[in-house]
Length: 161
Image (cartoon, rainbow, N blue to C red; front, side, top):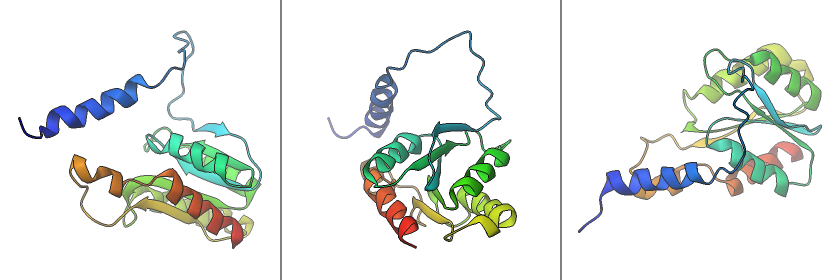
């Protein structure tokens, strides 16, 4: 039989789902409206959510700097306070997300950073995103999605500014 997009598409995501080995504390309440600082750092803030959080972690490991990773967890409500506090601490911000650059949620985060932390910035806010094209079919997804290499390049550009 030929290519079955439904079967192959879901197989990929089920494999990713099964790759998580972290034990879950079922008694612990997670405040979804509160951003999570995934990793503390001093040199730059890397903001990522969803599938981009592990990508952010890979890039942060590779760069020669102390990177703080913030996961907003939810788009609405958004915990801008945690994001802004982190950016004020580090002086640099990079946003990593799957959506296109134009009109993506990263643009709203960048706008808020500019409104509330512009005087704390040592470099312009950097965004590493999907390209400004319609989301591709499964077979081309790997070419579309930001990966650790692109995230690392973005971090290096941000830190060199």
